Amino acid sequence: MTLTSSGPAWPDSPCHSTALRDLGEPDLPAAWALSNALQWPHRLADWQAFLQLGEGRAAIHGQDLAAVGMRWAWGEQAVSIGVVIVASAWRGQGWGRRMMQALAQGLDDRALMLHATEEGRPLYEKLGYEPVGTVHQHQGLARQAAGAALPHGWHLRQARPGEAPSLAVLDEAARGFPRGRLIAHCLAEAVQAMVLEDSRGACGFAAMRRFGRGLVIGPVVAPDRVLAQALIDRLLGSVAGQFVRIDLPGDPVMAGWLADRVLSQVGVTTAMVRGRRPRGDGVLFGHALVAQALG
Image 1 (cartoon, rainbow, N blue to C red):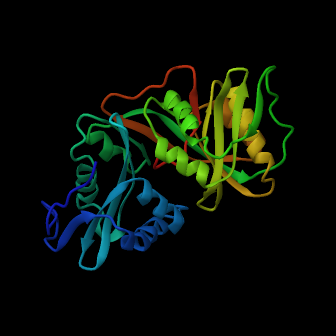
Image 2 (cartoon, rainbow, N blue to C red; image 1 turned 60 degrees about the vertical axis):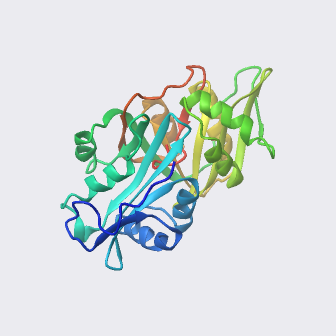
């Protein structure tokens, strides 16, 4: 799946000197500046990873990046859309809508997924996206905790080199669509990654990597909340005193549990889907996102 150029001028552009084209590596410092202006925590390295994993559009006005957005395809079933930003000078002129339409081009047969801020949600609803839940951002300085007790027969171990394909199968079972390249990236960049096992073998995993202002835990895949907590506790305990973020689907029990570990809730976004919502197998579940843009 590749985005195609719309030509020298953005159709129906507020200004004919604005061109819409593929987002490239040279555009990333300007994209990073747009996210910094919104006080989003992304590093330039995070933008570089986003582009390596997906593709995007850039609206160029003169020599300036006026708007940006990205998408990531997961097999033939689903696509995530994220980091859609319009520069402050050009807001309120329909550029957000045009960027969203460009990113959705050619994807009528796939589920389109995103996480909406309060400001962005009205536009996405007008474009046919429906709310399906919430995502809660927790962050703070990790502290050593007693650790969630594992039920009998379960244990944790470090992820092994070359294990990404088998762990990607677990992620697909939990999500309902394949994200093999993303899981391989998370494990390759991981400061630490843990695997959950019982007598059948691997039944879940969690990874922690550098992102934004410090570290982020995600994805977390496990059969239930208790086992997910054991994975998260092991990772938190290894980085006591460091800044850690985790984005999890709305779950008041998990939210309270994280607050006890001094990871306070600092934000909420709305999970939205256009098209048929993918569903996992009902045995494994995703307990934390890789990133709000990526899902």
